[in-house]
Image (cartoon, rainbow over all chains, first blue to last red; front, side, top):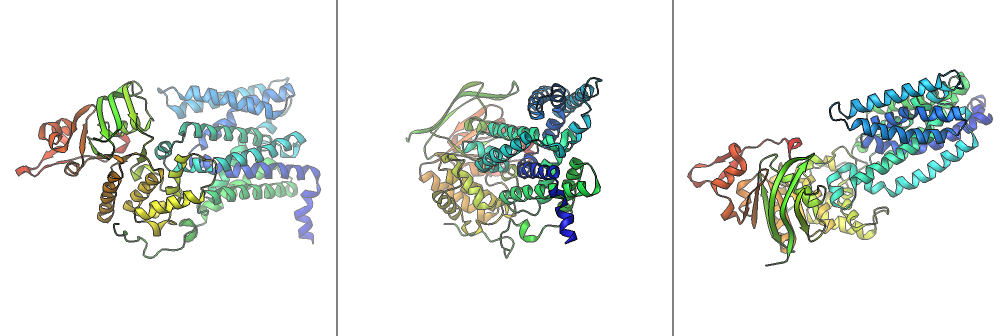
Length: 292
Length: 250
């Protein structure tokens, strides 16, 4: 009985209950979306976008505007600046992106540390899931619904693109448009998730779940579902730890996510999972079938 | 003569303003097969990108009778991506539109039929990365068959393929030509080029085009391959020495 009370105690607090709901909704979507982010090797883009939107967050805080608005505007400006800096062939896209992001983080810190600014830099960098508002919950629910619908509709094109971009193009798909759609989904997810996890920790909810499940889920569909489940479970664990250990909630969730990733990467996948759930074949290489 | 399946007229291509393929002109009738010969960097893949519409010609024009299907080299696919042979064949149904819906029963039947046709009906549930090189190539062919395209572009389809798969693929080519489909096959194999209806030689430009007997002579092959060409003594033909450095292919 005591054990059950121990687990349910955070849920008896309205603040923790809302935090858990926010992170579970955002985590479910980001955990699934993260599969495509990692598959398309957009992890650095996700990190750059989440860090680069800091000035937008700070300006929204200074103006008393919704953080979601600042995050969305910051993401747009960051994306444009990163795209511009990355075009300089003399220094290369990675270096150009790094310089642009460092500049944006510096600008955000400069604004946040100005004497007139409210003391919210820590919250913007590391998140404050316990300060979730009704509007934040509505935004998270909208992200979950719209994002899940988009991921469902785009599943086959994304799979074809990831497997063989040239073949996908030959089948009539537009790889550039598909990558843009993925980046728009990523930007929307970051803009909403940054409320709870902050500009520095939001990357964890996008990247850690796919790393945790990738070797164990035999198909893209299973990897997305399992990634969403891992993120939601990590939200529960993080909030529990935060409640009982009086630790920072956003950081606790981020650490739970990264622990799941480390465990998932360390555990050897079952042979069946490695074969995509297909039954074992014998012999391993089937003989070529006779010509028709 | 059958209707023209594709026509390229004075086409040139460039990457970032640097010309990589100039002045290519040829046309192919439905049901004909063309072997595209050339060294690495000679423009074979660039020509395919022009035909696929991925690359706009900086000069000239490219016309096709319909959207072509493309069979890439298996090295260009993601072997670590968790899809089965059936999933790959089903990707060909994306050409039918309705990409936002799950595959229909008709899509499933078409994909399984194509896998049967390439001799992989019993391997439909096997992950693509677990198949042998020849089986992977046949799976990509099944995807192209599902696409039901009038023109097929194949990038070195027999490279690294086991003899049984090579035989099956060669027979499939013959059947596809009999169905009126046009095949363009990029290759380094000068001797096998003699079995095609037409040969196109590229080396940054069009070196030659025509029937094998007219094109596969010593001057044309030397202009195509340069020092990579070795002529065998006693009329034994020619072989090319090439490096599989696809990152530098144009």
